[in-house]
Length: 456
Image (tube, rainbow, N blue to C red; front, side, top):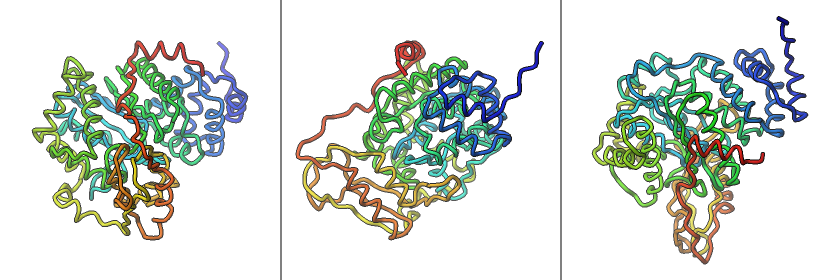
């Protein structure tokens, strides 16, 4: 039997650059080279750009997902004695559903091993938000991760250095090289982490609209179908919901202020500005509870989740998880007192009318430039920076009425975000049409059919 010819990274860059397809061995070579540092960063960046421009085939996407999953240690939820189910969002502004659905699903009997990410591009990061809680540890060992899961049923952590190391390298590079918005790279990044967590089932929240990484409806549908088919091929039962990101989700976008909004809902309150966040969280949790075998249908799962929201059990579970990971829950006794931004400014409506459109990507960049996000991997974020929206899409506003409150690291950072918000928010004389919160739903059957019919 002949020995395969040695592989060289420059050849694989040229091959992808020229629109050719890499085989499983070549894809694994790149993933392993990223994980162990044997391939220089500049070559990985060049390959990512080639992959972004030329696209990845279905076979390449699946090979990259599996190679990245296998690039390090994997977690086994076998000792938990429950069905392991997680949720993942493709990224949005104000997207804080994890803080509600993890405890909701956990108290309904599902194990939720959630490996999350940091701020990427114009979107916030779940880990950055949790780290605004004093003492909260996101970097747990796999043993510590299991301990929290055995105690609480849910744990939200970062990748360990040994878990999916290839994705850790690619993820940071994509943010710095303008290669985030690629269906194949997004799919492989998300699923490699989820599959490495040993999940039995996965619920995907694929964003559409002005704040999504993929703004065209057909691109979001393709990504949703691609992720469902890829995960199902790897043995994980998966469903994807296309959800609206034509405006920030809920009223808050930032770090600490998003946790405050989430805890308010977990306490059973129902502020009108947070109703879409509450509804989407219950829908996603309902699917998780259903796929976890704790409800016959997603609708029955929704009902169980709503009961857990109402009786306070989900709030208790969330606080238990925070404490188990070193966090100080006493800050939620006086959230306003803990909130100490460097500078605050209220944006007033510049004319009367209806908020007709919100360019949510521009809003995301406004949040980032207030200090809540990062421009380079590893940069610190300000836990207190962000935006609270006093009015959202469809609201009638009068000139001079407050429509947003901005919190910045310093007063010097306020001018650009204010300008971005004025560009992002369209005030019109007529009310906009309502946009459904949840659009199409992909399961294994219709995902595979969609991919067969899609022309890429």
